[in-house]
Amino acid sequence: MLFSVHELEQRRIEFNEEFSPGDIDFGGDLRQRELLQASGRAELIHEHRGHSHVVEDIRIVGRFATSIEVLCARCLEPVAHAVSREFDLLYRPTGVDRRGDEVSIHQAETEISYYEGEGVLLEDVLREQVLLALPIRTVCREDCKGLCPKCGANRNGAECQCGDTGEDQRWAALKSRKNPGE
Ligand SMILES: [Zn+2]
Ligand SMILES: [Zn+2]
Image (cartoon, rainbow, N blue to C red; front, side, top):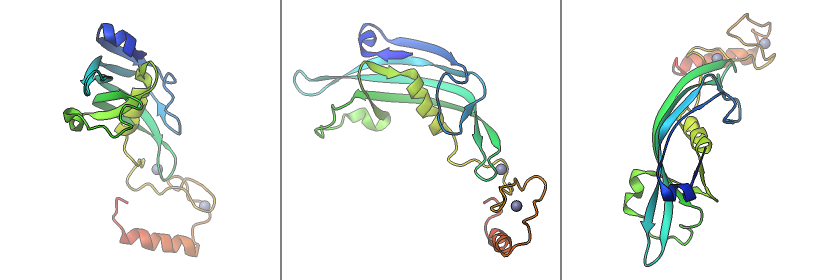
């Protein structure tokens, strides 16, 4: 769904959309598990900069919710995250701030991004917001044992045969000195 400057010049746009898994490409190892619901509104903000210089910003306010599967950082098993987030974003045309213009007063209150061409795609907004809503690092459980560095077996399951090497002993000693959660 495109929020085009042209259309926003006529009216503000309310949206209430559902995206099926696959509609938005999240890249990497992320997988959307259920419908992504997004609602909100888009409107044009006219920024007056000097005499006849008016910058047309697109403001998008809304919220979304879905469930995203990511891989455990240690054992690579999929882990589901319920993610939801509210956002209030301002998109400026690319290039308008290039000359180091003075920033507007309300800039601190909203996140500023830039758009190129006709306007902003809701799918692009949601992709970015989903990534921001996810934790930086996911583990399937605090005591996940991860993969065996030698044979690649998931050590949460059956023990592999690589167990009693010097390397593993040192790793165990290191682990016991650190926080139990890490
Ligand atoms: Zn794990
Ligand atoms: Zn092994």
